[in-house]
Length: 199
Image (cartoon, rainbow, N blue to C red):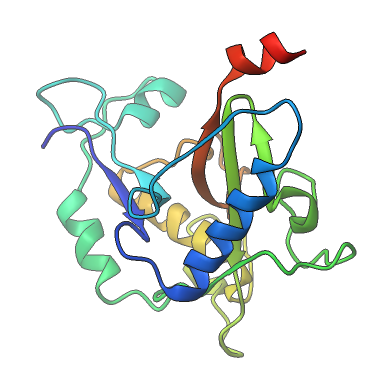
């Protein structure tokens, strides 16, 4: 296996999601002093978890090696098998439409209202978060007793924690305490050189 990433929403988009993307394109296109290069709609995707290897020939997980200094072989087949029967799936994701005081979910200490649409360096990013499907308790899916996130508002973060049982460590889970529940979607780039010239 070459380097791989588990992604979602690649290719043809649901109409409601495509409408959100076009609205974001339109909003950033009128920002003064910015040269925006949107990705094609079909190319845009969300990253669920990386499956990067530490070396060219082995299946050692890159993040486990980088963060913990250990060589641990990923059980990719086992994780994919788990995904076929996980009660965390399918994920229902909310993008946008968060009230300014909605604090049910925090993303790096900020509210979804603040993090939903942003420019990060030269990247234009939208983010979404799991929304509650029903009243089931998903807290049992957590792999670390210190992190119990009851309710499917945290299903993506729990899925990434579950991957650790298969020696697949998420890039933003450097420690046991970290819990990344963000669905990160890059929709284009900013030409920083062109922007600097204008300024």
